[in-house]
Image (cartoon, rainbow, N blue to C red; front, side):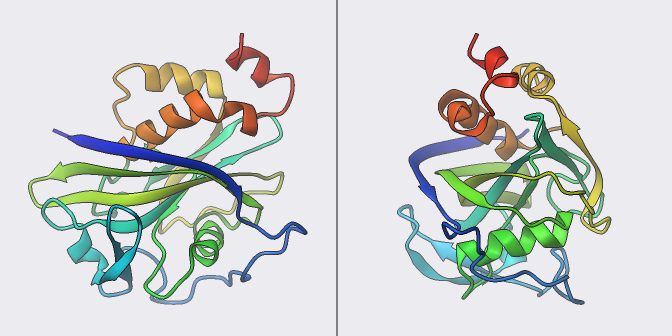
Length: 224
């Protein structure tokens, strides 16, 4: 049974440079860069105020009830206001084969959030796009008796018109989902979706849709 606890803090701000430059261009992932490889990453431990307090191996961060660490989630939309959703690989240690938001991961120890979000977007989906900060929240979700997520997660959104090149080592499947269909599915029991996706979507739907959606079209459905 998945248990969730969350608290939310919000502040809307621009992360990318005004001229669209990225802090660091993300290269194609090299051997050992992909998530899921033992010992590949040291994550950033934080307190409730997102102050860095140490580092820990990724596997240890997710053991038992989890140790609070810094994370991020990305929501990527297209010109039709459809959301890119992905099905997590069957090889993931947490929530394998579950559907989730466009991209989610962690900054590595010593890596800035801006560098991390663009790096991971390229590694998983082969995409570059401007990303804007929406909100930050803390949650704990227990997957089984031996593993969990316990994250202070920053949520960003972006928009792209370029082709997706999904990394099949990380993603089983992906699709562009109309928001009305997504909302109908998540309004129910929403089996098969990751717990953080459901928490994040509810916050986005409630507080940030006016910032994200293109005037007209889907916006008319959301605000009717």
